[in-house]
Amino acid sequence: MEGASAERVRVEPFHRVTPLLESWALSRVAGMPVFLKYENVQPAGSFKIRGIGHFCQQVWDEANTRAQELATRDGWVNVSPFDHPLIWEGHASLVRELRESLGTPPGAVVLSVGGGGLLAGVTAGLLEVGWPQVPIVAMETRGAHSFNAALQAGRLVTLPDITSVARSLGAKTVAARTLECAKECEILSEVVEDREAVSAVQRFLDDERMLVEPACGAALAAVYSGILGRLQAEGRLRLAHASIVVIVCGGNNISNQQLQELKTQLGCS
Image (cartoon, rainbow, N blue to C red; front, side, top):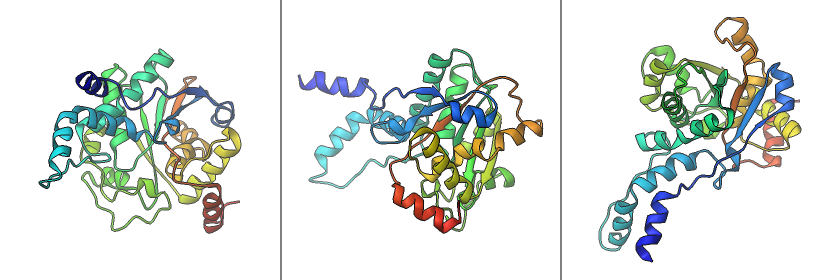
């Protein structure tokens, strides 16, 4: 039984297949079908269980052995929240689910960027399922915009500090892999203000009855702040009548009281 149980743990993923639902409210704002990939309903409340869970399943035997040794010797397995090939491989499962749900490629995938793990995973997934033509709209908040800064400089940039209220996006330096992703897929990097991200959180709560973090609000601001429309008008995003997918990345670390405090702090209506 012991061996069978361990085998089950190695094979069965820790993440769940999350809903992909069309949002009438966001579709009306965007002027095109908007599908929401609800990663905030993962067991841990975030997409991160995909990558970290996959990482742990691939290092299961090693971790199990290490756990038995901890009483007598030092040595820990360092699981990065975003910077490891196994993390990206795990996040790629999200795109496989999109293919199964949609059948045809969306016009774009909108996501938030912190350390870059989700971006790297989605890029890997798009390449894996044969959708390299699908552009990624990579959203950040100013003060946590290390990916945008890196793209502008053509090299990794370390921000002096994280000044954005979107603390979940608070990686001073993105993974080096993110710059490689920009060479493999079309990535449109956009930066919004904290106020726009927090306003998007409130509007999403009103529209969909779901409370998410400002880090997720950065992605939602692509719709609510008109970023997608501007990119189309500039000729940088060609959507025509295609749908888009917004990854609702997570929302455990916020309460309604915190949201109201952030709105007051930032002067949001």
